[in-house]
Amino acid sequence: MAKKDKEIKFFSKGSGDYIIWIVVIILLALGLIMVLSASSATALSESGNSYKYFKKQAMAAGIGLVRNVCAFKY
Image (tube, rainbow, N blue to C red; front, side):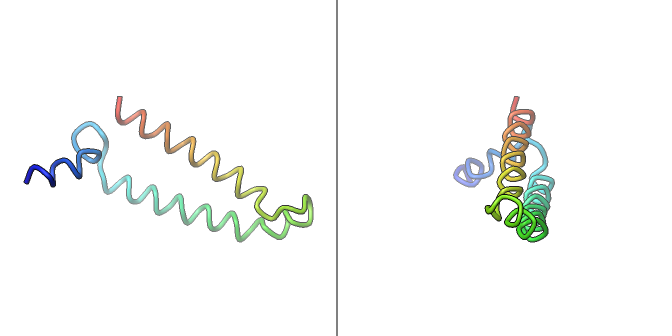
């Protein structure tokens, strides 16, 4: 039982509801996929790099996730 408690320590008291975290991560992944599929042709014709907008969005998503974890943890 102690091992199981250690495994879900991140999702324990003070860190937010784990269902909300799962939903946020799923929606974030779907949003990144939509940005990639919708903007790759435009970015390729504008800059020659089809991942231009995806990289910007993924960077913002990563920063947002880190800030969320810090906000829930402290």
